[in-house]
Image (cartoon, rainbow, N blue to C red; front, side):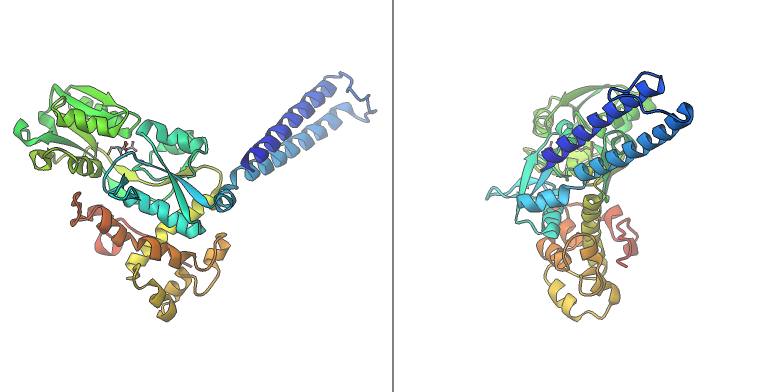
Length: 384
Ligand SMILES: N[C@@H](CCC(=O)N[C@@H](CS)C(=O)NCC(=O)O)C(=O)O
């Protein structure tokens, strides 16, 4: 279907080029291939034609573009599965459990979107940092949920749209405790293991330059290779997002031997990403994420969502859970979508606690990722 639409778009585009070429010949006084139509005023007529051609160009291309790009929901529902791009191995975010199932914080947002659009299956693609954005651009995946930092260049130059920040993070540095270093400023001349295709390598370069110190980067495509190199003593420092350091530390030979230094050298707002241009798909992903956040604020959990939907007298809760109003059907889903989402993944706090929280090997506190009512940055817009 997508290919057919792309073919139609290409066909329309080529026809249009032909039209413009023919039109240009006529404007220059070159006869048209199908014979000349007498003109009352050549100049004026050509201006009108230019206008007409431009308007039709825009209309046809816009229609073609919408046809090509607005197809994600339809495609996913027709296929019966969601194509979600995620990590190779980043415990807490996306990794395989003992039964070979993908679990984690980023995985839960894939599951939430699959529940929203009511498809039974998710096809995961494990992507390196370098592969992830091209995989989304090419259509290999329809949603990228893989600790991806929202930056301006990624947003505006690559045909991508960042949805909602699901985790406010920052880049940190980890060292072995026996290195005796207490601050990143003491790292002049250090060797630093890191992953390519990430904001990590850009931030660390900025940081060392800003502080007038030097480092030797040791770069790898795959995170497991970064970890193994660092763990075997090939580098003094392992650097990535602090949540990623906590995740990777949990896989080290002896996690207790390592220390995350106090400096946070960047802002890393991590958000699931979609292709630019399919606004309906982007809205579905955004409102699915916001629903998990609003559910936490309202005390709605995976366990009580059906009861709350049946009994709550709060008009916003009723709208949010599809009991009243048409918010979810207007989004192109069905009124049961919100209950399915929360039953599948729980609210934002449940997702955080299950995968990243103090009771997990990552042991992260909520910090900036607390609800706004608790002084954090997690804030869903009104369901109205
Ligand atoms: N947030 C940064 C870094 C993201 C990143 O690639 N993190 C690594 C380090 S934890 C990762 O997730 N690796 C897991 C893997 O490659 O499977 C970015 O968007 O560039």
